[in-house]
Length: 197
Image (cartoon, rainbow, N blue to C red; front, side, top):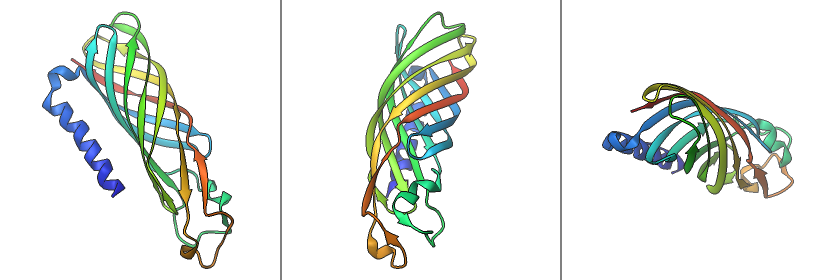
């Protein structure tokens, strides 16, 4: 079900890009490093779409994907090794926000921004519900006003989730708790290219 939701959200973002390229203004692809409070370092990537610009303000949508968090996350609840492979958690932030572009749209242009996030979460072991959160960011673009530009940004996300376990699924493992909370808040560094028109 969650993978279906991810595909629907990604398809909607792509449809918005192809349906109204004149209003979009820019599209970006990026790689991402995200260091969260409880799951440690995560590597992923994503896409960003400029939805509308009003002066120096730009409204945008983005979707990112992080495949696996560290297996140490589940040491807090499983006493011993899980006989099944994969103890990770997949995180797909879908975000809508606004950024304020500082300076002229040529050469080096810094920006700041903030927005709301919807996190599609899926754990290899246990159940976890999707959650909402927020983010703030600052970054810069480098290049001409239109065409291919390079960008890099740092963003801080805040979100918490709860992983629940069914003891019947682990007959040979001692489970200390039925559920535990995880803090996915942390700094992400994104870098990539954006195409503006």
